Image 1 (cartoon, helix red, strand yellow):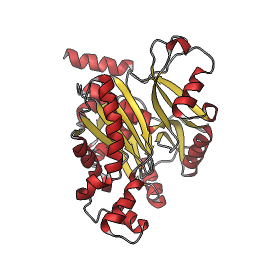
Image 2 (cartoon, one colour):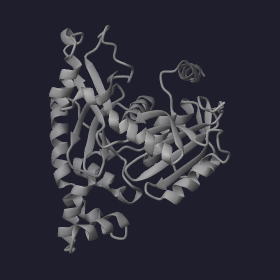
Image 3 (cartoon, one colour):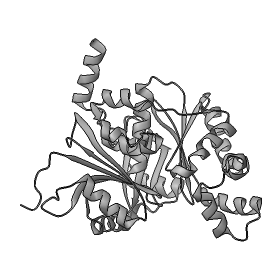
Image 4 (cartoon, helix red, strand yellow):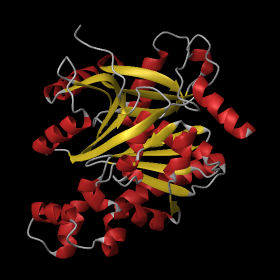
Length: 353
């Protein structure tokens, strides 16, 4: 038998900067997070060592079988309002992709989800009009799978990290009884994916065609450096305090964000109250506070343990030593499960007590 049944659960998140890994005591829930590992993206030796530590005894297939989350550059995670009278028309959803997102649907593997709870949108029922289009090019899926296999990871399930992370934020806001709309920013090298979410689901989405790399020329100019490569090395090195330069660095991004937020606030009458910046490398974590301060809102603070306990997920003392902060939220959201009978039952029992 090539693949033997496993009792442990393995979860891997690949971002633009790092690998985040977890081993849990069970593939489902309840479970205990036994081990957490973080490895720089391009450190091949450290990655190989981490994979061995996460799974000391290799599976019969020779691969680490894991649930994987990725953030490919061409990912599509966009909210849309459908015309219910046209939903059942052949070609309508393809038309939405082409006109609103400029995406050739035939080249993408796509899923349409209800924006409120992330469940599959059923065209035949078409009960609601607010949806999320999620997907990526088919050729990218093959490339990602092959790359994971080459380093010894067998992706039993491959997810868009943005989708699982947004589900986690929505669930966390509902759990913590937060009524404040929250800005979620995925700051990448060339693109920033911006979302506005609440306990009721994903309310808005927009990709902004600039990211961390757009800040490099500003660093070069402000510090009088000879070239952009020198500026890039200094920026990522954490040997210089850039917090004072924050307003200049985020100026262009801030203008785009204020435009999106203003439109949302006019449409809904609600104000953004907090922000979380995901995917930032450790040394650029200060950018979250710079953006929050510039927007006049708070940075979202997580209290992971109560939320995880409510989802029947424990954290061993050893794993807790990894220092759970917002950088781990994407991986934790990948592990967590929502809308399951056992989760609902546990929540009901807790409420009764």
